[in-house]
Image (cartoon, rainbow, N blue to C red):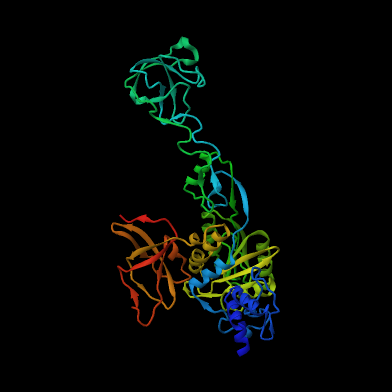
Length: 505
């Protein structure tokens, strides 16, 4: 044992069990003796970028029910440790080129974007009005338009040129007078053909200074200016898409957004639209809540979803569904099958049939304790797999806590931005403490003195109604020997924002 400790092998094994790479121990061992230390050789030349299964912890589904685990073999880790393991093992997808259109929402720029030309390219007007010479005094002038006069020709004395906001100015003009500072004098008659009803003469009521109401070339953006930076997120607010269009960018390089394969597990489930029982008995079953709710959340965030349906509680069905997910998507998201039942098959199937690595199988959070994160080697890539608890409220809460960061990492988001935003709120409801950190579903509103949060009621993990209307997850600290039993009304807590904040008054 002393030899093993001195060689660093026990420390190395502990790090690998927690999902690490072991690189530091590798480096120390290599530095001391070229991968040889105290007569012990390091034979397993693994490259931790491609996860290799460590000792299989899941139960053998081919054995009798009596052989299943009575206690989970997976260590209970903290929320922070779980997120660190996700960040360590989920990497962004490749770079693609996309047309600049309305559906760029959610993509992340893979390169800096610079202006390829001055904006505006030529002198143009800021307002609707008439291009004039600044020396023109108030008086009556003939009105010219692009219909009867080319902007490449000088406007003759005694005339003005009608312009609309953003339009170019004709040669010789050095100011623009607003429509509001003129008066209509006459219009064209029937005998004037196509010009009938058009302005013929106006009176200029004021004298304007040179350069009045003019945008000169490059005053908005100069050629070569960086208008958006690598890593910027193209939001649904429209500003980024508008900026790309503004500088004439027709295509842009972005990180590819992940495609999500989604499935539910359990013979007890029936599809809402096709209620066929998988249980093989007269019991009708329960409606699959998780797939439609998670599908709605994913589509709302702009992700493409491959719906793999409900998977029966047998190994062959699980293997077939996971294989389809690996073939068609970048990340697999399952619900159910993560706990201690004999038909909870996700972990053993991942480990025994796909050579996958379970990075964590339990997290000290409420709800969501059996949340599982794994990776599976597939062709030339490593694909993340998340198995969320089957209870509907647990599935949605853990989706926001774990899946959203993973999706953003795949899509090239900066690590500092992958988690949903958090704010401080004042509780309007008392909340009892639990031994685990709780993510309590609340409705966050803007009150007269700041943000306030009201509980959505009963927080049982099967009660999906606790998320109906919820736009926040209040982070309730775990109960300790020295802590109070509950958080009182008026207490301040940090809250994860999962929806739009409304005004209370």
